[in-house]
Length: 235
Image (cartoon, rainbow, N blue to C red; front, top):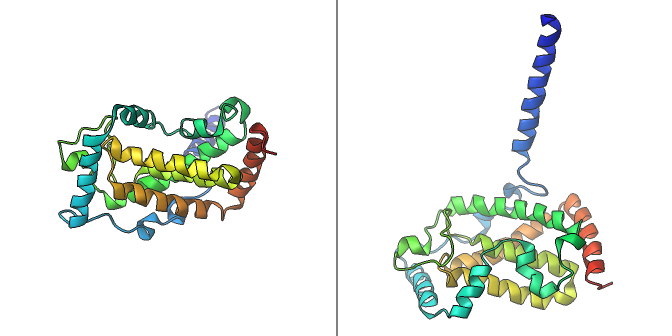
């Protein structure tokens, strides 16, 4: 019995380790952060004690001082990162999980890829958040624990916007307007500098450019585009 079970046990252990290795190696779906190279593409954030840094900080201070209750409420709601929270108002009630069985997991995969790229470049630059530099800045959303540059919300919003605009060119202007508001909210709520937001827009373009080079992404993109246009009755 022992001679039979031991090889079987060894095989099972090897299979478990193999599965774990594959899972660890596959943190992304279409692209890896190295295929984007944001650490090399993005201009470094303003240096500490520079004039540009001072202007960046003053912009956050002014946004905190001048924000209205309506802006605060709207921007607090925009702290969510889901695509449905992001563009539900732009695309209407048919833009929902129940009607989009292909589109929903497609954008979930895109989200994983772009957030991995964002986290890598954040760690590379390791810029402190505005509320760390100036304790008088009081964020009205949960204080993020990661670095400030570039803005992850800005990256996410513009990645969604660029891809959706490729699928729905007739909605492009409204989508880009929405992305602008969504990104600026990160300054208004007190967790990002304006340069964080602008670098997020640039990073998003680089990420989408890397995505569209991948045949698997384009296959899933075409399927999601067909479903989405049908759901929104744009065919």
